[in-house]
Length: 250
Image (tube, rainbow, N blue to C red; front, side, top):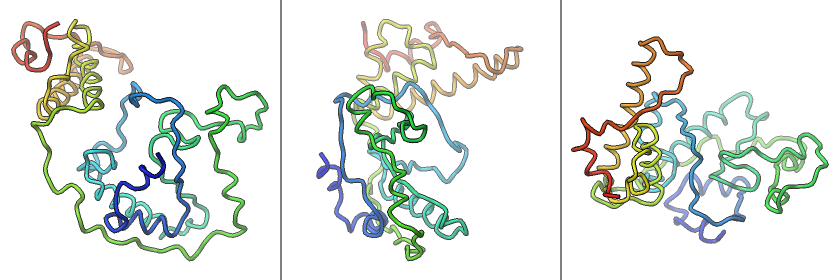
């Protein structure tokens, strides 16, 4: 698995990551204790959603252009490298679950709080913390590159394939959207998204989010508490014609 993860692209296609890998340490040991679909947590969050710097997607996840992710890492690194506080910083670039650093699960706290209780699982016991890495040197490095190579080549030179079938992850995103617009109460819920194409799924998700936000604003105008959770219901009478292309018969 480690070889597969670390061999996705030739080094020349990833100038930023190749430079960082040659200059700094690389976490190249990958492990998965529980095989599964990799379902995302049932939580949606956006950071700086109104910032144009995050458009188009630069998260390095398929099928987005990895070149955009490289440019984002380059921008962050060069900002930190030029900071007067560079000698007081530690920059970790991780993806999903790596050691003890989960993307949506708390980091192990046994070392941080000197806990002596037994670990819950072997995976928990194996998950590493990184404080020991700060003891490898007595002084911070000052010979790090101030800039990283420019990313001039797109790794996704084609546009979105709107007629393509959805991946398992994309179907899950559609079903998450159905939690917003109320379609999750329908008997056809398990099949929502499975017959969609990419363009249809994008329209469905955008529409679900738009309707949910509109309902929230309407509730506030009607005097609802700002912390209240709006529960949507499927509008079967006014939207059944549009809905027919999104769900299959149960």
